[in-house]
Image 1 (spheres, each protein chain N blue to C red):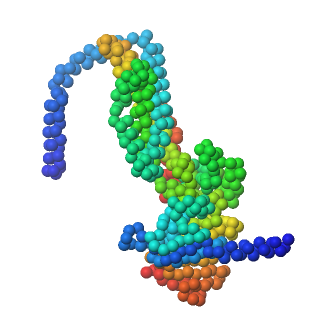
Image 2 (image 1 turned 60 degrees about the horizontal axis):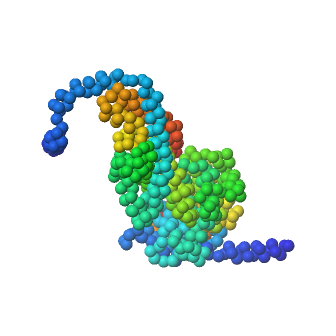
Image 3 (image 1 turned 45 degrees about the horizontal axis):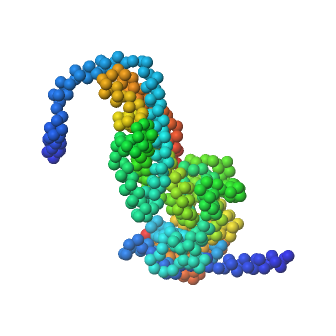
Length: 276
Length: 261
């Protein structure tokens, strides 16, 4: 019995060292002259809580859209689980079912209830007849109720989405993503515009779900302090280029680009950057 | 007043005079004709109350025609509006559908009624078909315009889950555009009741049939009863739709205002 457990753990650790996301020299442009991203290299391990930090316009949101196939790079290669992300690729479209994406605007449907919004995450699992008659199976509704409890929205199942507070709306968006039974969770500035306490609550919620479901979470922030607090790894993007990538383990920080540095030096570096 | 404004006003007045001359619009004739109006009004005042039940029944028929026309028209218009929305379809789908819808709107409902009278004969059914046609063209246009202005954020967020086109329409586009639909349906019903009231002119049923016949035989007193019933009905429908709108639509907009940052 113990041995089986150990083998399981072993195989688990083998999977967890897999690279789930790989970007090689990725460039994107909206027109032929201006590049949003300029030669980005990223490689993200399965199960990592990854943070991307940058100022607005640095290209960090573009990075997320590339990962879920909403955008295609003009140069370079991206692999998500060894598949190139592209909405029109059938194989990747199946993978999109388990990539939770929370845009900065959250993308909730305003006129429907919290429960209905969360059930949208289960849409790919519905067959044609079920979606025609708007009939979600009993176990999906149970699952949604379970997730509602997890994200702390109990009692608000039947509220319309536009009646919620900012923090509650974010909880709905997270629940919708969790309803997808995701392997990857992408979130774009999910706690910007929130007060300090609510930010921590939302971050704790995601961080807890990430650990429990062994998700690969990739979160975009503009606050490096928040990123360092929650992420295993932080990449700093500036003007479309990755200027820094650091690993965080408790209080120790390892720099993967410029060798060993301590926390203060890195933070100071970034703070200087943001002042310019 | 700048000199430029004076020139523009001068041009508009000149055009007004030329156009009036061309269509024989003569204010003097209008004034001379006023005594005739007095005769009509005088005869109209001599209403014959015994026709009230007939008038009410004719009005009830008219409302039923408008009701069927509105409901069936909207039911056909909704799927067409989904096909005509530019943000949901390719050019090859929406362009022909839009052309078709524009064609149905080109004719006013009275011309459709004439056409259907030839097709299915005199009576209310021709009127119902005419109302359906006009409603399709009108509601589909209003609705595809609403769909095109809905927030692209939920559409993007849900399509990034990898759902089908049908699911995207069913679960995002329809709920996002639904609040406008109720108000458009109320407006359309209101409009259709007024439209159906005149379809009788071409023999397509409804209360207009009585009005036109009594006027033809100079029985203004009888016509007046029917006209008063139309007026009262339109006022009541207007009042009821305002109540419904207040209850369901204004409220949801307030909700949105509160949460907008």
